[in-house]
Length: 274
Ligand SMILES: [Zn+2]
Ligand SMILES: [Zn+2]
Image 1: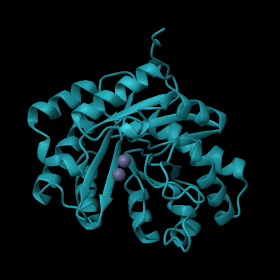
Image 2: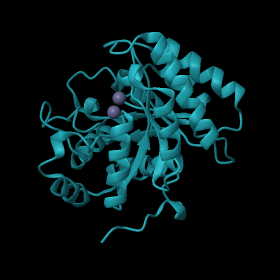
Image 3: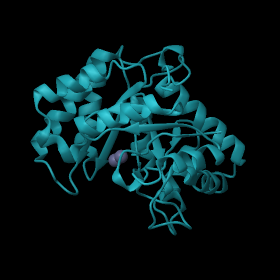
């Protein structure tokens, strides 16, 4: 029923009970979970989880917080890891000017280098931005203009997703025009959530659902550890806000994620370890 397009299941928050977390997700109707890496190490862990659990798919990349640690050698390893059949995107990558854990010029540099990996591998990107919209848009606009074939398909362009999207209608439309999707986590359920106005206007067309586990837990579990099973709470609220049926929200967001990440492709099936 659902695709959780963004969950960091490798964090130690899940060390104790990951098999239970997976079982609860399946029980709640989660069919697939995309696990984005944040460093070379966690990208490897994401791939390990994708090998272990049939419903898990991985993304590999350096989060902007970790940009200062991304050497060229490590980026080359990210690129070779991206050849794994269950890697569906380069991510999460981007720019975070709120925390500035890495110098901004390094963040931009590593963001560009990782987009080039995605272009070489013809994979979409999972983008994280915070207080960095202008720069992030400039970079993706420039790269998209130079590489028109990148993830361009007859059914529409699918260059990636801006996750935890908090932007305006205007910003969403710029991204849609560049071939991107936007995804919403539990923030949709927060009281007086600023994202609702945008959500109402842009509708379901190019939207994905995510939990951003272990963060961003939706109401009424806000503040607790988040997990993929909670995606149903976000979907329910989204249906309410949009005046859509819950099964329609589930269907369209799942279709969007399946198309963007090519989740239905045979070659992505991985022989499970027994
Ligand atoms: Zn993020
Ligand atoms: Zn994330």
